[in-house]
Image (cartoon, rainbow, N blue to C red; front, side, top):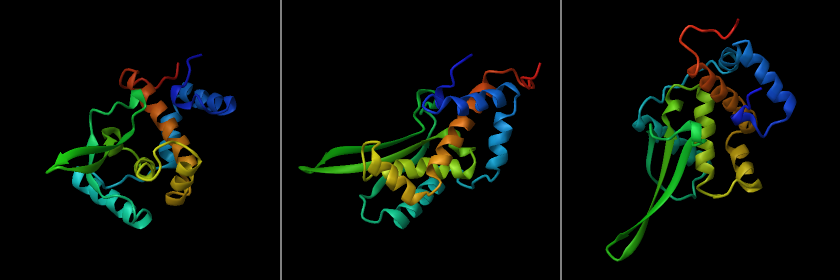
Length: 174
């Protein structure tokens, strides 16, 4: 039995159900059926506007963002779904901080709730650096279904990884 790396922190009964759906070749379809709505955020400009809108609604007092973009170099396999960075530069004898949010390119084609969950996660890092109780409370404030979406996203990534390792047209059913 192969480990499900995206689901390793979840109870065994949930992992077992995911394995059953995966073995039957239905995990991807099940998740896509639960979240069929696509988003219209196709390019970096639209992503910037989308993130700024969420930030303005929930985190008005947080520092401004310098850059928001889809990043094809982020590797989902290394658990980097998004990245929040603060870059300090010396500018005329003063330090200027620029904050960036980079979202893995896989979310360009992911269901809309998953993009929202990742953006909420990265925005929460503007206020809370660590994944602690305050961080997750902030995520829940911005997205009440955050924990369910995170679990569904992990199922989606498991299905994507499994589908990528299978020859095209192979359903996985013997």
